[in-house]
View 1 (cartoon, rainbow, N blue to C red):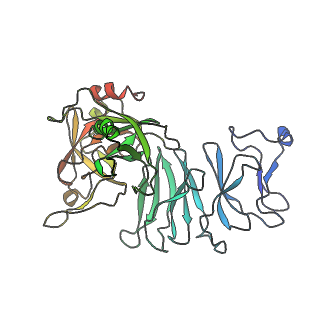
View 2: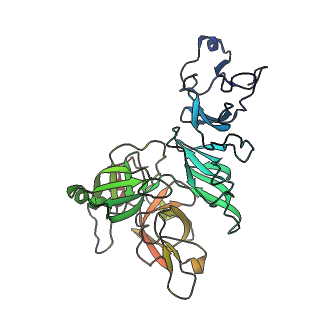
View 3: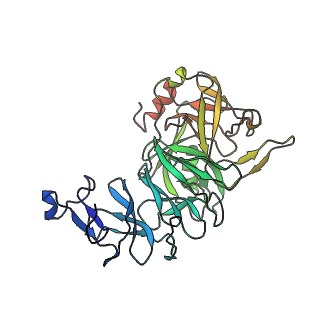
Length: 397
């Protein structure tokens, strides 16, 4: 709604969880929350988006230019989140925060900091927590993310990678993380991908949860990060309190390779993955594609010689086709040369396999077997012996 004077933040009813309005609104009358740009000049409000009871929006206070703001429905609670692009003169549409989208309690948006160009950003409502997700096209050019859509807790969007593949479909999986065990000198001795299945439970393979007690005993640490790129200097690292292995784990024969790490504090703003129903994979066709997400090594096996490998700490995803469904595992074809699809590699152990593009994690990946191509295995989350273990940490569907 607009006043006759100018555009300002005026609310009739924001969301049910916001504070009660002044008495004037009791009869349904709109009220001015805050005059963001004092005087007769408009604040150019736009992209109003509710994220867990907080209103995010784009506004111009006449000082910082068009930037990301938030409001709880009060004057003092309506504030600039972050001056993403400090050069306020840059007010063209390609510099404004746009396409605000709520996914799992986190705000995603397109923003331009004047250095990286238009790229994908996210915000938890704080200045420190408003960061770029990935610089898809390094430099001022930008990837121009568009059509941000929340699909079952996963963000899908279109972006360009500057002539490599053109404008294509991309996605982000904020509930997939990486667990790291370090000794007292900061040297990493275990590294596993995994997925959040409750606010405190992180599902992965046994190697990392099994080393938590040892890391603690020698003065090291066990941590999990959900940042899209793992950087020991800048990533948010969440302390692991304890680790648990399936009581019937068998490393020799490869049976029941499930592990759960319990975080010291609940994770806020990330929607946990869902687990499958009992024997759900029994009704899935062998040709069904799964989406696997992890932090492992990137491999190029397209040449005639050995594969080329590199590691940059980035979270990536790929699709893999089911080759066989066995009583406790699934076999997956990950030979990208033959199938055009990707798969797991070293460091992806524990990576979740999602059913199609859903948020249902049907299996735990093996990131070692197959040397990043050929056939790989994953342990089914839908079988009774897995469910009996996971039921101790999360409600099983």
